[in-house]
Image (cartoon, rainbow, N blue to C red; front, side):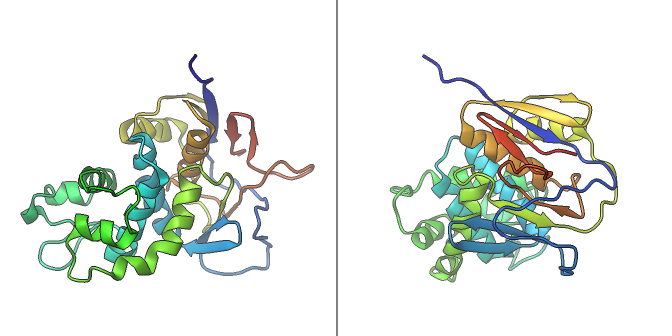
Length: 263
């Protein structure tokens, strides 16, 4: 008997919209600091810039879309932190480029392809799944099998933060991320976000005003889509956090099988 479909609703936020909430870390008006996103799993908290968070989210969603275990996202994120600090750079050693510093001369793809985060993540996973025992191997050793780096043990330095980010962004840890961002520079677009989700990950959705509803097969996938949706560059607010429902607060609320980001 097929499992029931799960739905996730993602709001395309407009200029001036702000969502306030609590998900472990508390955000207050007088906390003046650089834009940042915090990922929380149990007692562990890791911080990334919005750009790093968006790239980690894309890497994780590719793993979800491919049906790979969260461990795949952990390995990929740890690798990208080491190789590029999770920034899609257009330079590197020799002809290395992009999040994973993949080299066109080594068969990874064209310059345009390896600087496309979606293509680059898929190329990484294509190589990862060819590594015997990647599912249970030591993270830094598995990453080295893919990357063939001159610094084979360096990936281990980034395993802790990669595990936290991957757990949240693949939906294993619900409502585990919140961001403090600069003020929005443009209106959100439900249609643009819908097209991006379909193009990147194959998830279909129907725009309805300023919201999108995605149908997924599991609750974890619903949370993963919601995490990705709230990290996309077109959805920018001065402050955004997730929490479980709380009377009188504006929060991301997830009833069984559904997640909503109010705008």
